[in-house]
Image (tube, rainbow, N blue to C red; front, side, top):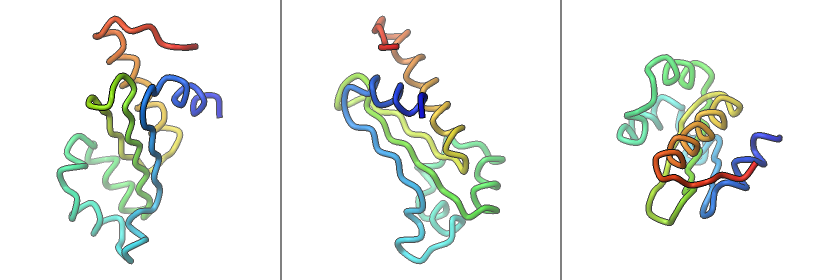
Length: 102
């Protein structure tokens, strides 16, 4: 919960976490990933394989610095997805010289 709170505090704009959007349309994870290929372009093959095996798709979309620059993480594990989003924010802040909240 602490990491989620950190993510919320350090996203100055939108933060959206979705789980199971594929189920809304009666799709399997594999069908959803195939239909939205471009969104999963930066997701590792091992992660995609595990999402398909577990029929679990977790997506985090975040706008930490402004309403234009965003980050996007896809995973089968919510903890790992949050860790990846945090790492993305930290790297982006470092590149921009932005101080993050503790």
